[in-house]
Length: 114
Image (cartoon, rainbow, N blue to C red; front, side, top):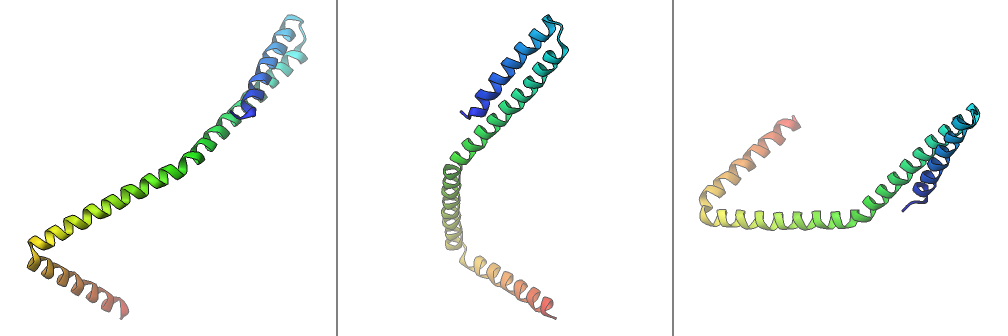
């Protein structure tokens, strides 16, 4: 836990005490200082929580990247197998499709070069 969270919580509590003392003692300056300390404490607490969340996300990043790489590799393997199976079942149709795609790519490149 980030120390800003602890310090912020403590400042907030002290600020509440100051506010109460200011109200009871009819001292607007002390009451205002208490309110200001509460705001500062709340902001510091939020900063500490944000910092903790960021550090946690950074700590989890390597595992998330590794999981994403594993999923990508599995998808590539499965896709390759499915394509190989389909080509084995329909070799002539595959040859015609690849030829047509090659022709279209060549035509597009030739037109773009003009």
